[in-house]
Image 1 (cartoon, one colour):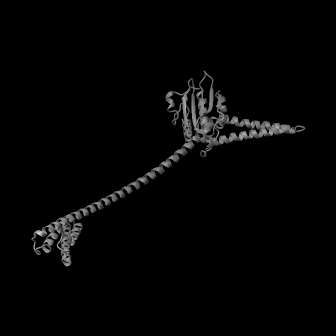
Image 2 (spheres, helix red, strand yellow):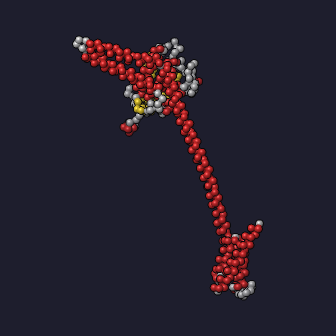
Image 3 (cartoon, helix red, strand yellow):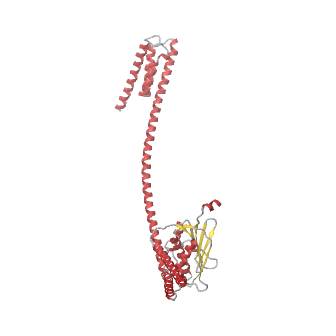
Length: 398
């Protein structure tokens, strides 16, 4: 309260001092008795209104009006007015009041603008701090999400490897048979080569043919071991340009014994020629082997019809390749179609429920689709699509 009174008295003192200054300056310069000659009083009103506010400005207007009447308007040194001085007096009183009001209003507007600017600045700073904190939190969440995704992909890769190992366990007899065939052929050809070289005279053409057969069978055995090792490896997937029919043939080489053991006839319907695709051949081989083994398993209890497994490749224009694996087994119940690719869902007594889920993830990672449907007569068909590789010439033609 005391501070407000002191501030008001200080403003009123400034108003009185400004009026005294205007009186002295006007008397010193001996201005004429007209409203335009009272410039110092106008300055005093403007300064008092700006520095002291509305009430200091009003006091300055009153004191200035009285001073002009007393010192400058006839009769001088009297508060009376002659008729000819009344217009000058009214003009000064009105103009000084208007100037004082405008100066006070301008000061309030400036103060309001300053306060608004300060408030906006404060809010901007607060919002900036909030946004900075939100950005830091968002960056932390993104980093955590990336870490979780990396862990998920690593776990998925490991799980895919485990399912491949499990599938190869089932195919152990087939692998043994496939490896044994080229090895036995190599031994037989080596004996033949030795026999032809021991003849008198040596039959070099036959010996050369036997040596070439040994080389072919050795390459075949090496390729088979390489494919098995690739299926077991923990290495990250590597995509390359592959011919889908070659991948299908490699997969068939791994399931021949399983086909024979299940008394299943295999029929292939491979489109030729077939465009290439960009994929990991080991992963595609895993998908085809898994679908084929599921088909063989589905036909195990069937006794009223032949066991037939059909693997078909198609070129679905304009930009898709499709592989279909069809069996003549028990089929899929309609209520299971929606869940068949869910993790840990299985209709087998000893199944893990991960084969089809992993296969679905592999095809999705290759920008393709994997789905199942029941056949019109019996059995089921699993189909998956992959995008083909378009050459620059092909794209321009399309």
